[in-house]
Structures are given as structure tokens and as C-alpha cells.
Length: 90
Image (cartoon, rainbow, N blue to C red; front, side, top):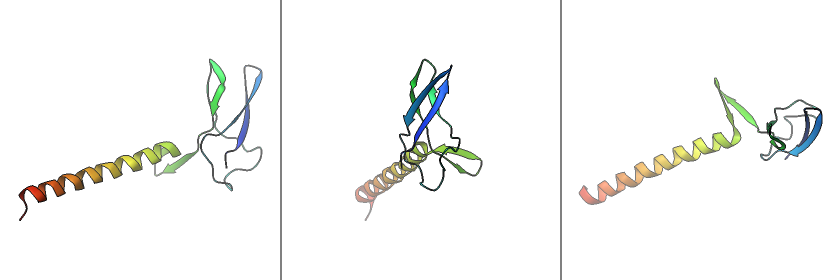
């Protein structure tokens, strides 16, 4: 689901659609959500989805970026290990 939202800034009302899908059962109609926007251009806005892991708060995008970063480190380590094995292994 990519929910629609509306907010007001300096007396004007703006609408938008979240760029990241949200869990369908997480929000009800008229529930307050956090909206990020550029004060110089309020029409440029987004409603990010956040998750809490322990004491840290991540947006969905940040969480995926961390997962892919960790996966790349593992793949690099495996690649280096295989290279060393093939060069110096028996």
C-alpha cells in the first residue's frame, strides 16, 4: 500500500503519496503520520515508514541499505577467501 496523505504548511494544504509501501494494517484512516517535506518547496514531500530495532529507528530504505551492505561484505570476504584458497591452498 502506498497511502495518500495531506498536511498543511503556512496556511496551505498539500497532498502526497508515500514513496515506500506501508503495512496495510498498521494505519487507519486519519491516523497521524510523520511527513517530511522541503520548507522551500512543500509540494516535495514524503511519508517514510519507520521501524524500531532495539533503541535504533530505521526507515525501510535505511534498513534495506544496511542489509545489502552487510551482504556485500560477506560476499567480498568469501571471494577473498576463495582467491586465497585457490592461490595458496593444496
